[in-house]
Image (cartoon, rainbow, N blue to C red; front, side, top):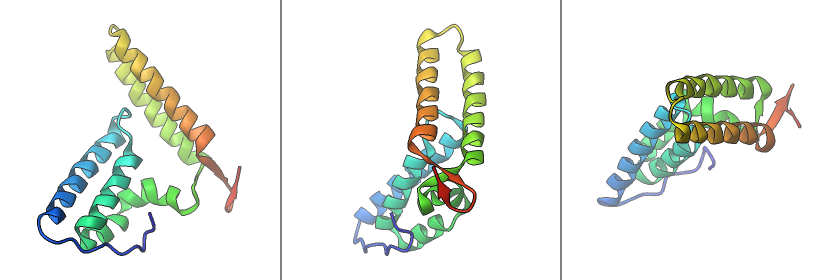
Length: 139
């Protein structure tokens, strides 16, 4: 989604439905920063989509927020991430999932789900997201 895209005008109650969807997806995306089982970026992108339909003012405010810029905005600019960012994300995900695995060590299904989600993060970060090297070079 382009950052300079104008929000279409909504009339009546549909505007409020979009704002409710935006609020819920923002809350779930923000919780996803702490809980690695919830993906942050897709929920933030849904928030932008819903805000675009619900309120031009909220859309603009969200796009300019530091939360958006640190998560979606940096990736959105050139479709790549610095290796340091990837390693930071993977480190925090590994730490949080390790804590979850420790407390769930007697529940095999939870351990299996955590393992699949962790492997998904590794595959996604290192095989699908391009790595930004130096000043704009990608691999």
